[in-house]
Image 1 (cartoon, rainbow, N blue to C red):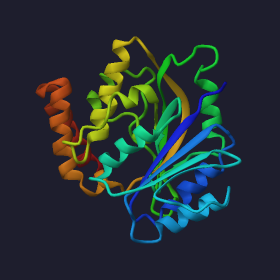
Image 2 (image 1 turned 90 degrees about the vertical axis):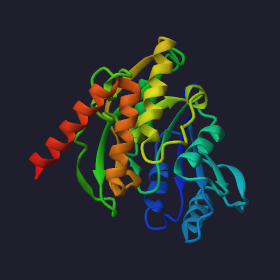
Image 3 (image 1 turned 135 degrees about the vertical axis):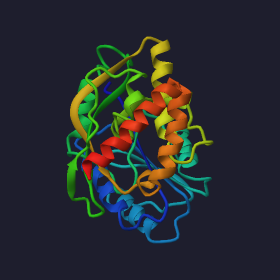
Image 4 (image 1 turned 180 degrees about the vertical axis):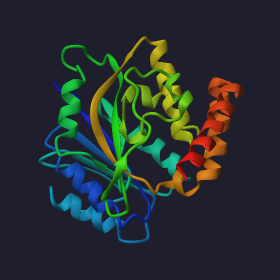
Length: 270
């Protein structure tokens, strides 16, 4: 059987951007999708968008925690308070039941209607069961209206390893599909406020390498990523936190050298 893909969407007061994310998942041609939606008790119309999304597939009423079986895919909706973005993402991991999982948050969307179908066909699931720890690819950036801005500057390396992220987060978090059992064993570290995803990806790859599992470059554009995320809005604090994380994983020499290059590159771009 082909793999079940869990798509995790974390939301809070995202009424202006959640619609295109839900539509992106709904339009996928691949049938074996589980959509886990973690809403931190939004006070705007986010839940109304989620309700309509569910009703387009089947017509239940939403309680605080429901699993809805639709003609196309599973939808699991969890509404409860959380302690921030990464706490909510940890909840998504624990609720996920798929073979692989990925995060697609409000404003992000899958690049094409066939994205998951193409990715699943490359997973080798049937012929080489669960051997790939990570499936990864490229990312495009979009604005608040979902309009294409540019290709992401950082390119996914041909061969990904846990050391690849010495040069920054070369694979966007939303284009990083992870075996769910590995993700459940590697929760986000809530000590980090802005760059826990960077740390998470590195630790996942380190865990996979210890088990001699492989990473697959799909050579696909997987995600249209909303560029105005939490890290973008808190760029300076994010850089300082990432500096500490990079030093933790790769040493202070590498961390300082790479961050000096980030500064030089920013000056050149001006």
